[in-house]
Image (cartoon, rainbow, N blue to C red):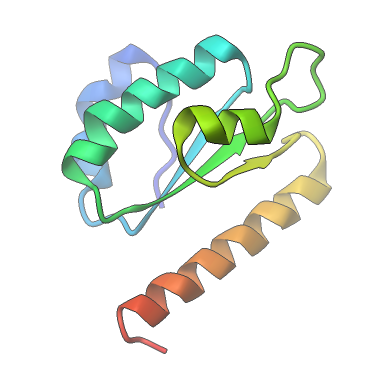
Length: 113
């Protein structure tokens, strides 16, 4: 499990950190700019090199007034997207459940279940 920032100075690390990854959790701050920047990451890196990786998008900061809805973020990114308020512990439990379900799906697809 890797957690790395989306800032430009970290992009050189992304390719090596994503090698062998089954799930990529892409967290945006639900602003239009951040979501469109995230789409560029998906297009330039994940879809090009890691097309077998399951992508889960998190539309964070759903408590802010200028947020995009998770459904709209999903339309823009093209991957399952879930709303989150990371400062609220209830959402952390929700994300863990989403990850567990995704792991079950991957295990089933790869014949581990």
